Length: 117
Picture 1 (cartoon, rainbow, N blue to C red):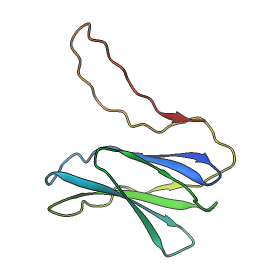
Picture 2: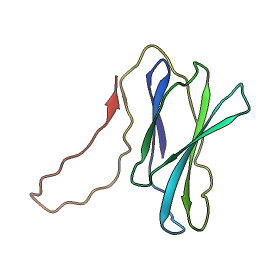
Picture 3: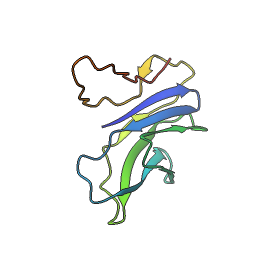
Picture 4: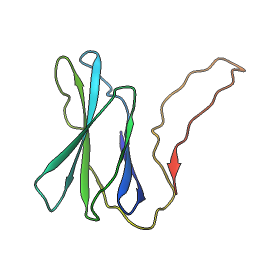
């Protein structure tokens, strides 16, 4: 899963879930983004312990974003593409990705929910 939440006129948070199938120990994620009207692809490598990144200094144009995961064996296929456009008005949005958690009966749990707006 891949999600985006606009954080302001020039920023967004991109979050993703871990790959369903891994071809080895994950070395890093790469977040790719491209302004639709331009040919240049921007990239940001992300430590494998994180599953989100804050992008800043984005233009106010439609942007396409996708993520790949890299291991010693190589790079994964691209995730699906998502489209975002920054705005001065930030609506409420949850950028964290849900996942299944198992707990024993009467065990306290803290469930994170990261949001903007």
